[in-house]
Amino acid sequence: DAGVIQSPRHEVTEMGQEVTLRCKPISGHDYLFWYRQTMMRGLELLIYFNNNVPIDDSGMPEDRFSAKMPNASFSTLKIQPSEPRDSAVYFCASSPGQGVYEQYFGPGTRLTVT
Amino acid sequence: EDQVTQSPEALRLQEGESSSLNCSYTVSGLRGLFWYRQDPGKGPEFLFTLYSAGEEKEKERLKATLTKKESFLHITAPKPEDSATYLCAVLRAAGNKLTFGGGTRVLVKP
Image 1 (cartoon, chains in turn green, purple):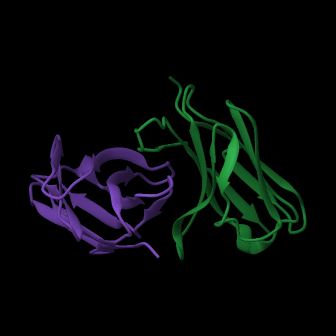
Image 2 (cartoon, rainbow over the protein chains, first blue to last red):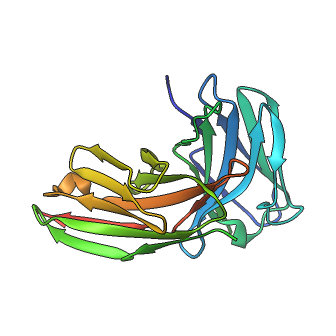
């Protein structure tokens, strides 16, 4: 299996622009997670899905952030409008479910908002 | 709220110098404790899951142990390629949400 795939790997954008991050989970995994990692706050869970349904979005910082999972093989995290404080590395992870809880992470998207 | 504290924040070792990393946690009903390794510029890589106090898991030079309040990751005779940040995380009994600690950066010098 190719593992979790994320795109783009790097994104540089100007404040106020819309940013869309993409994720393809491992085939057959029931859970998908979006995380943000910064030096100050470490690794934080933003939202997670089970069978394409959002279960917990309590970590989404504000209404500027939204996430969708239209099917089992694709998810997006959108920031609109972006702000400099959104600069971070965003990771997507997936987990098999059915009693198996370990999460497998993608390579991340490094977002820089100027 | 679940809390995970890792110590030390950073660790410098000579090759072959064994050491231990600590992960202290408070969680409402522990379903599992996870160890990950993260290399610069990469996503965390899964190492171990521990489910109950007294459990131990090993992989090459790494050994993870679990008590009711903390977990240790022992690195035996480390090599430079063991240099990485090691993260631990807890999963509570309800839901499927991992809470991560801040990590321990390990540098092994030849």
